[in-house]
Length: 122
Image (cartoon, rainbow, N blue to C red; front, side, top):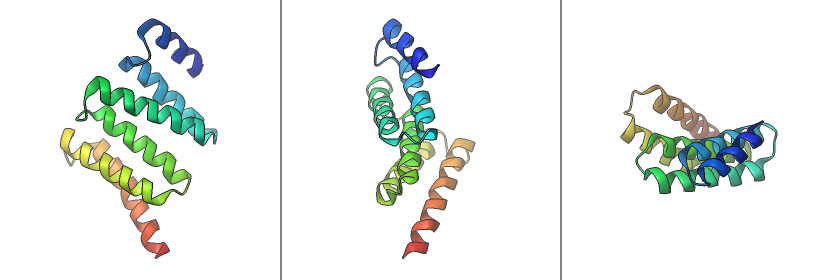
């Protein structure tokens, strides 16, 4: 279903249209849940790159894409990369949404969990 939606949006709107990129991001999430991490990562990076071009760096969708990529890296135990990505996402959310926005706080929670995990490994 998500692939059909993506194909339709890509044909109708183009590869880099924000709505197409939303479908890309949605499909990446499904692939992540299915354990298809390589394919999910490629889709997350496509969404992030396209959104940066279309929306600029200071947009909530950019932060969401970075946070999603961080979550995927965390699932793969790529902790150093996850740490950097969550830090970037959190800084972005604080800047564009504010420190008390629910999305900012959710990202902060993910980042705190990662920090605890990394501290326990030392």
